[in-house]
Picture 1 (cartoon, rainbow, N blue to C red):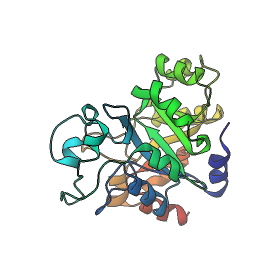
Picture 2: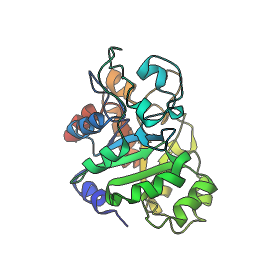
Picture 3: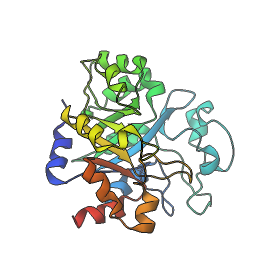
Picture 4: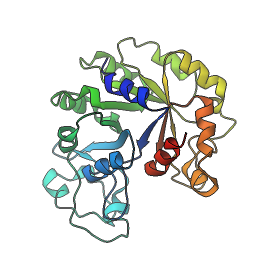
Length: 273
């Protein structure tokens, strides 16, 4: 259900690219409509965004906890109403204040066209309000949802009338048992986390088992901290410093979708395959 665009992209490409929080460079700030547009211009098939509500219930693109980085001060953006949020000024990549404020989610939803896909991450805390909000825009074919594997969240998706495409984040094969309980979820694939190369989900056998279930496999290539990786040694730092053939290893394991902070570099690699 609602897989047409995704299936069309897979017929065209060996693997798909997700731009993590869109593209953040120069005067374009992460998690904005401009960052989403830059994702597709950079060769990404999917723009990943984070969503949260204002105090008065307006949904914005923003990853909670990024306030100090993007505004230069500590506070919780969710404690502000929409008028206050739209009076905020972002810092750009040079830490210079610019005349740009957070983007309303509805702006992005209205802008989606053609084969553009968005992955709404870190929004599951608000699904009781967010899912009905998404329904208003009739963009089911353009939206991928993601969350941790928890009964409460799975039940929300299972009972919701509109069956958005869903990729749960899993840390072990055992979590599939919980997913099996819910038969009315539009389960498209899984995002797998393996913090070490010895991790269960880093092994080719585990990925093969997941694919035998008909699931697409997402891995995170972005590297956000020196001491933290999300899929073993297959990450952006390694690709930039030691060569993009590090991504060969992911494809050889059967990975279908790679999330990165460098979509244009990953797209150049893909073009050469």
